[in-house]
Length: 300
Image 1: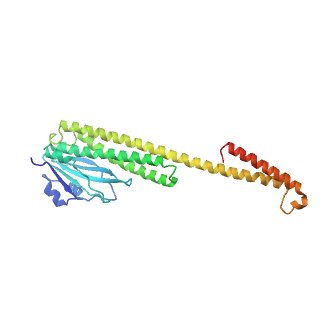
Image 2: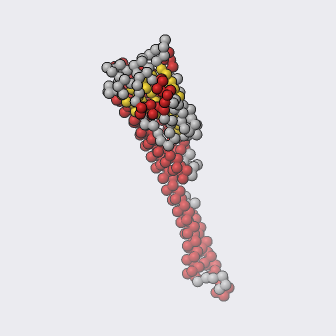
Image 3: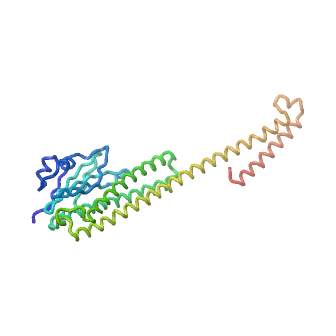
């Protein structure tokens, strides 16, 4: 059975024009041929161009070092053919793996179902993103007593920016899927996305809604970790203040006693030993009382 799917990796404009069966707008060809940019993220979208549908998708791939790789996948879909364009990330990561399409293509399923399975597979990568984000937040919370506060604040700031970018990506993908569900994206009279295919997109939309809500939960969890960090810093400052108070108090009373008696080391031999004995006794007694008081309050 003839294939309904053609896969390209980092193609040139000539290869794109040779692959698509219809006339494609120059702007679309330029977008398909443009390499993945390292300084900006592609924005997910789905557009209808009369005889074909053009889409930009962005999948996420959690990395072992805690980072996140973005994988751009573009597609041009007609009722007869699906052309996917995978772009290799500029950070050296792998291009997106569209293996989910191979069984469906071999079965000769309609192009609309192929497009739905690809978009659904991209949405599933956001679930992997959630798992990696929750694991990172849990690890930060578990190690908050071991890491330096500055390191924890830095990682929280990085996670916050990553969550904001990922939520923007998920929201744009969800809006694009919603346009398909509403029937605003199609070729001809529902030739590409008939009613049964639109119902399949409903499951994809539910996944994207769940991811959006879970990202909000992750942001709340990060706020909890940040509050925990602030309370830990305040607690450490209180402990330092207690220790300084103990030191100041232990020094203050002896200073007050010797100042009251007007003592100095050279003059004690002329005044007699009684003043030295009295002051020393007061100092020792007051010091022991203070130490017992601080010990009972667990300041030392």
